[in-house]
Amino acid sequence: MKEFYAIGLMSGTSLDGLDIVYARFSHSKTWSFEILNSQTIAYSEAWKQKLSTAITLSAEDLLSLNTEYGFYLAEKCQEFISYFQLSKVDCIASHGHTVFHQPKRGFTLQIGDGRAIKTQLKLPVVYDFRSQDVILGGNGAPLVPIGDELLFSEHDACLNLGGFSNVSFRQGEQRKAFDICPVNIVLNFYCEKLGKNFDDKGDIARQTLFDEKLVQKLSALDFYQEQGPKSLGIEWVQRYIFPELNHLTPQQAIASFTQHVAREIAKICNQYRFKDVLVTGGGAYNQFLIESINQLTNTKLVIPTPAVIEYKEALVFALMGVLRMMGEDNVLASATGAKEDHCSGIWI
Image (tube, rainbow, N blue to C red; front, side, top):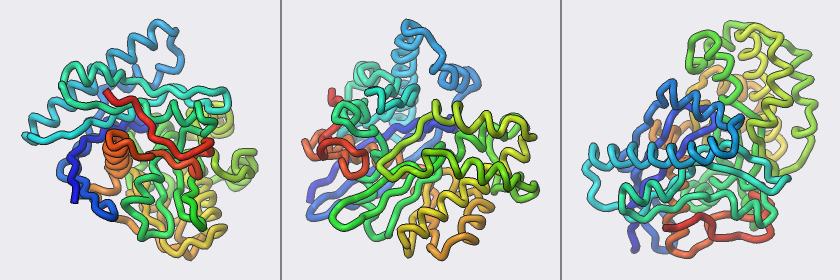
């Protein structure tokens, strides 16, 4: 049996913070894992501002931020290694922070230069996991299905409720996956207008009436009529979602969008007749959202341990880094729409 020790770094679109996970992966005929240490480092207001406005920067300023954020990742990773006294690290796999994601135009950009991490930590680094998939005609997302296939295949499907929701499931001989709808990237935006980071347990949505006509209007958007593979980015949210919600109070926007999310997710569960679905990401703690989905489907929603809820994405990127170093495919074409399965990421 082979064992690998890897660190995964993940910065989500909802700007909750930087997720860091240290895991042991074991491989014989199948893969298994153990999360040994994990931590979320909340972004300072300055870093939240830098990352949330990166999409508006000039080319020069964006390149500067790419390097600066790379050194930030290196610093936080070094602090993590020192705090937990980690002696064995086979690789650091860094997703970076997504600024642009427009696969139909042939590009995606995750900032956080891996060379800055490598220079500071003197450890193998794998980064830029999405670009190659876009070059191969794929959506560059979702990438996590490789982890669902290798680590969580006992469930009918895996549902992530992060900045966006995405689902991954096996259909015949292939793993299918696609983005369902935005989640926390929208909900947290309106929570911040109320001085909150997120809708704790979904209490704001629970206590507020939603706008039925608006929910139906959102469900009629073209994206929801398309079949997967398909993926979403912040640009789509800014163009199609915020203009529909901005005339509401923040509370009404949160309530209406929570209902929208519940309906879109339940629709997918019912369409594919999932018996059980593993639910991870920050939205797994949104009790009202989970209850709302449950009211609309017979699919059993499985809520795992907090470590898996919060760090599954970072865990899978750590696995992807290991697979990259092994020369094994770590991106599934059936999930992204690329021409072929491939081994992605820059390894330095």
